[in-house]
Length: 217
Image 1: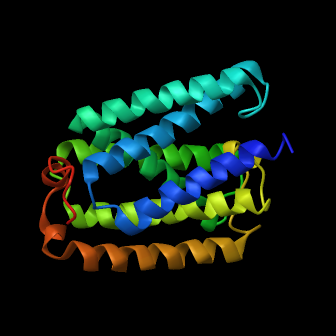
Image 2: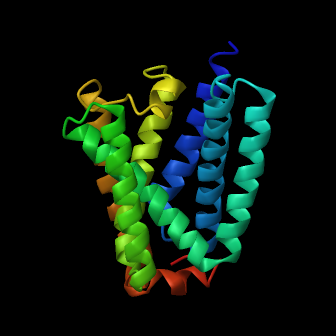
């Protein structure tokens, strides 16, 4: 049961936050980016301790402590500073999208998945810095990234993959085609739902939405 706990915890967090990102990515943008920042910080903290101590992902008290501390730090920075929030969001969502697309087209080597994810993350972060990011683009990005996170969370919950396979980028589309197709369908649903809910707000910039934390679109 102890070995299953990290998968259940991370899986549930991924499904809840991923669904929010996929279906309501444009709503209360400042709050959403803070929540996403917390999720990224949690994953980074747990992964960092795993790499440094080799005690396993969330298999030690230190892993949980560092994960929670980095989650709080990333959330605070994302909520307080627009530049930090948008770079963090675009870089992390770009990484998720890049590695997912790479797995979908047949890349199986872990280093290849990570490399493509990093390149896509850096490209999106750079674009976010130099451009006045339109809301509609964030809707598309958040829908696809959120869907990917939801599918990964469900695969963890139903024991299709384990946490180490996800951390080491060993999950490929060739091994789980039905799950990846389901993610694509969910992403399309997310885009439709967000566009319909946002209405005219989709024409606004991300900065304008971020500055209105209680906006509902």
